[in-house]
Image 1 (spheres, helix red, strand yellow):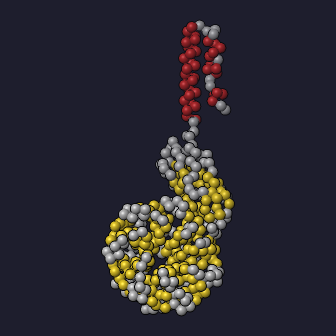
Image 2 (tube, helix red, strand yellow):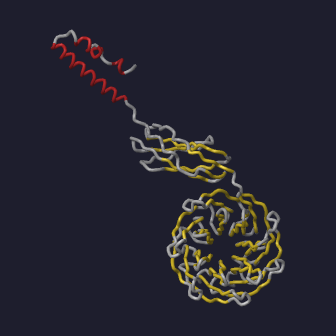
Image 3 (tube, helix red, strand yellow):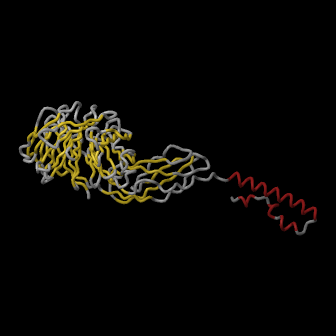
Length: 442
């Protein structure tokens, strides 16, 4: 029954009786009518239900992605009761669980799509009394199949830690098994063409053409320092020259006639290689922690300094390199590559880090992405690729450096330690599984 049906009859007849009654009667009826109205108002107020939460805002998160990757979305709403919980409809027939209650601000949930398509993600709020909001507007999310495919492999006898590509050959630093030269003219059927083995452990390699036409592989060889290997004839690589270092040579970069060696606890070593048969150290610089990798550009060397982050060294005077800036990073800087005014760092347990080095004296962290494994290696082409240990090869869209987006991944049978990109191919140094070749979507 409605509230109007419960109003005493005296209230309903007031207007009619007021015309015929005496003045005193009108006053009496008036008082009676006011009393009835108060009863109705009190009854009406007592029957009101609490207002439900407001409709959540449009979910915020990625609007594109690939199958099998975790994506997070957040939303917000308010309630007169104060506390609100949320759930998401992912558009693929699945609902999330309710979040915990919160008194304000945004809450997020994560989801994985297992098939391609465009999905409408929406959110709903609930207060502590069980009141439900309307669903939010849909955020359309386009999910594609990641175009990363394993197309070739070549086993190596040791443990592949680093790889460099020059022409039709891949040069693999194979730890105790030295330098392996692999023909990748057909990426689907790579095969070993030659090798060079010396005392020590091959950790990293850079390959380049000398001005004389000689092709050299410059190898960071652990406790043995730097080896220069002539690979002009791939089937018979041979030693040109070597230069010992006081620490442990983990990585290196070549610029002009100098090699810059990341020498672990002995910092950065500068070696003149203008005469490959007689390389000689001409300068050095201590770094805050332990130099693991280095890249050189425009008068500066950028050192991946382990727990010390990114260390910038002025190398305009090769004999007297000097640290000019340090950028702290959340993980352990293992590898580094430069692309324009940005440095891309394999930051160990925290994944990929992107640093603005437009001003070398004031490097600034732009963005990070936490990978599921341990980021040992990184390279940049159309995408940024991270060698992520037991989590294989991870591929990122870096068009927005403040928010790198994982767009694909590929499992590898070994442990991905290093990666080199040429065009739409990624060459992965995969530990005991040797060299692995992947094609990537353009």
